[in-house]
Image (cartoon, rainbow, N blue to C red):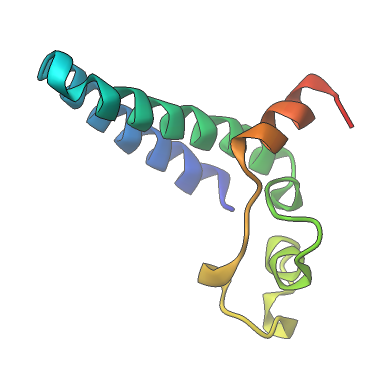
Length: 97
């Protein structure tokens, strides 16, 4: 949920995508998959830079607690936080409700 961590993750996924792409047609499926995750993480990084609660599942109270800095009250560990998917990220970015 940290913008910097998501940015670094995006960079790692994109590096993996480019490496897979350079292997030729037999690895294009991996390149596309990894590039998609890189894009998702980069968009989530932007949202998290605005506020970390924007990237967690609104219906998951523990995730919201962690995103708002109140994780000590959550029943689960931060590694169990649930984040939104790419579809939700794109909906938020486009202003859709």
